[in-house]
Amino acid sequence: MVSKNKDLSQSDKPQVPDASAFCFGIVTAEWNPQITNTLLEGAGQTLKQFNCKQENIYSIRVPGSYELTAGAHFLLQNYKLDAVICLGCVIQGETRHFEFICNAVANGLTELSIKSAKPVIFGVLTTDNMEQALERAGGKRGNKGVEAAVTAIKMAGLKIRFLLQKWGFSLAFLNIV
Ligand code: RBF
Image (tube, rainbow, N blue to C red; front, top):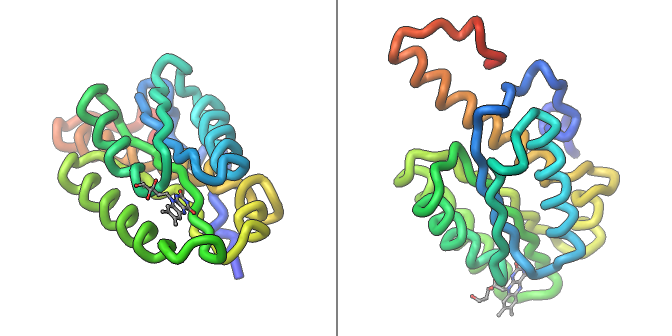
């Protein structure tokens, strides 16, 4: 069962920092495009909803979810980003590679995030079937691309918060909670 707290699609605007000064990367897997395109649409719209400028969003596509880590790495190497959002969909019923791909991408993104000291967001649907994926890509369980974008903004804001505190700035003038 999905608790209310777990569905960040419903995030209230004041709980999410203003994203007008942030730059984001988005990496989208081409496998299961019906799903990943919807995740991408939700993520892009959400970044803009929180005032991120279109020119501050660097979006690329990679062949499959397995390549998300490399794609995120390329973006981090080439642009000054506050966070990278990785979007993919791996469906268990359709591949015996399910566990290999899911584990590889989860471990890869975690390691990249730690090594780069940048938030790298896991927006990969890992479902039993297409129906469950559709539910999470604009269906009755929201759009996980929206949640990935909200998470990216929150993590970018958290990092700025620590930096500003370290430098002795007040956070009051920023819309950072
Ligand atoms: N990539 C996905 O993003 N989702 C999948 O469900 C998926 N299933 C795959 C099933 C098989 C049998 C193979 C060989 C690849 C699959 N991939 C999938 C692609 C994978 O992420 C990667 O692009 C390729 O393995 C090339 O490295």
